[in-house]
Length: 126
Image (cartoon, rainbow, N blue to C red):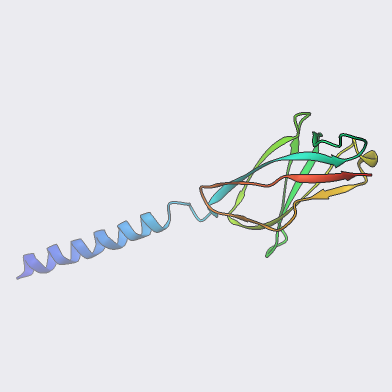
């Protein structure tokens, strides 16, 4: 009977350790996802087709206010790794109104852990 109790206790300890290890695989850090997208102009002189622009990109977590930044090169492409959550996406481009115009994604963005979410940022040219 004592042997059974020892084995049962060892199994319970092993299960608890396993749960702690599995539950703690992120090391206490939030699990991340990736936001990719493009900075694009729309409108302007005919034909008014979308055109990529460079500039800094900011993702702001809606619940915490935490900000994460990245940049788009001349191709307009960007990729930023952030903790899972809901974000507002905004950007500036030195090519548009000397960087004073703010472009933004059309709606807040849900970023899931382990996933890539796409968000384009548009600047309207008058």
